[in-house]
Image 1 (cartoon, helix red, strand yellow):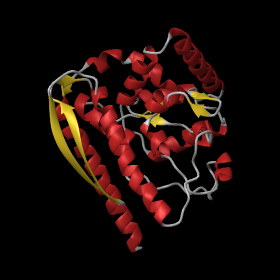
Image 2 (cartoon, rainbow, N blue to C red):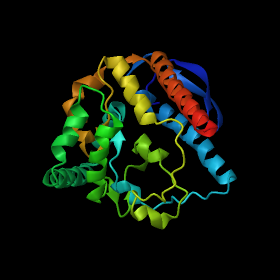
Image 3 (cartoon, helix red, strand yellow):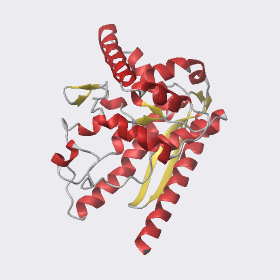
Image 4 (cartoon, rainbow, N blue to C red):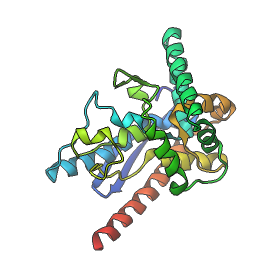
Length: 267
């Protein structure tokens, strides 16, 4: 974290379906924006998912994903409000020519979505004040994927914001043949299980902090959404309180996932 402040050291231990994650982290005790804890949350998510990947390999399954394999970059990626704010900040730090190039690609994506009749419903999804069920989102997922529209941050089949990529992108991996990914709707796709979806945990955290409904923002709309909600990202909280609340959300999610897998194994 780049914020200059006193730091309190936390020992974090998470029980996951694939094992235990234990790590020590330094958390600022001063008041910081929620984006300050994103690197920590991303790191935890990657450690949790590394256990799932290791378990898959121990079972003899090979992870097919590699650099340049970007079929999944045609899917609708939902991100949390904190991730949208962080992404907008990262674009602001880019050289003007690169920033304008990416903004042009985002605008082209908006035009394609508008032509397909998806821009308005996706914008409504980003601004919804009520929780939206997976069943309600599924038709949008399918219609979006049917466009096979590359993510606006994809350049020559490589992610141009790799270090800032959303949690949903970090969590997706498959053990089915890479050729099957040309159609991600195939029944043959074998995703590696995800123990905790960090975008969802961050969305729940943001809703708790702001007294709003949990929301996930479609990635192509994230920059515009962050600009529209610019005033909200200036809010700050004690870093220690932020991480405690975040770990509580993550722990609750992990507990539900462990119970779900336990029930599935008993069937």
